[in-house]
Length: 277
Image 1 (tube, rainbow, N blue to C red):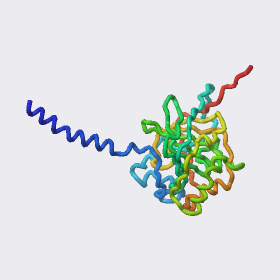
Image 2 (cartoon, rainbow, N blue to C red):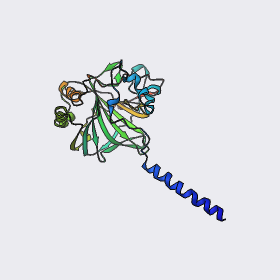
Image 3 (tube, one colour):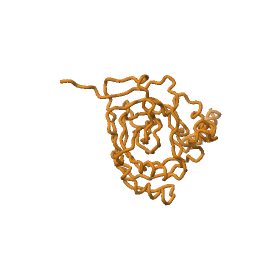
Image 4 (cartoon, rainbow, N blue to C red):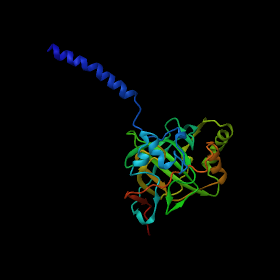
């Protein structure tokens, strides 16, 4: 009996250490890196997109993954879904900070900025950032800009909404934050507090969207990301796109990952069902 008590007591310190380590360790790596200086977008570079998976062991999915993003949404391989699943966005204003990550500008919400709901799972909005030209393509067409709204569930799964833009009238949301982007571009700041930002001001503009399972488009290229790409492009001015590039001071003209193989994945296109009188 005494031996059993001693054994039980000897396990308790180990259990306590395990709990402390579990609580102190970071969550599984699902988030995009916030320091992008270790890689670049030159295809012939030793740090270019084809080499991302070799730079760090935890980035291996960039080279070996089979569900990578972005993709081309080609009509011939898209399944049109007749019933309609509305994209449920329940956002709210929250304090935000602009961060220069090295190759893009990220607007990061510091508090709860609301969520989207997909298949009864809530994904909390964490940040948005911009790629120029667009990373996703539709029937081979690449657009002038793409914004990614990155969300995360309680189980650490990611869901991203992608909105495409073509040159035209200025985007109203970028106009709201242009003062802060200009300050970063001029002063070379890496972070700048913006204050309250309402993500509802990022307009979607269409009820039609594509849906597929992919990955983050920057290292660590984590897979099983739920992607929603709005089918109708909005407009952005050339000056706004140039400002987004100037703000990061990386001397790159582009920050878009090349299109990745589909590998027999399903791509669904959701659209409202037409009602006839």
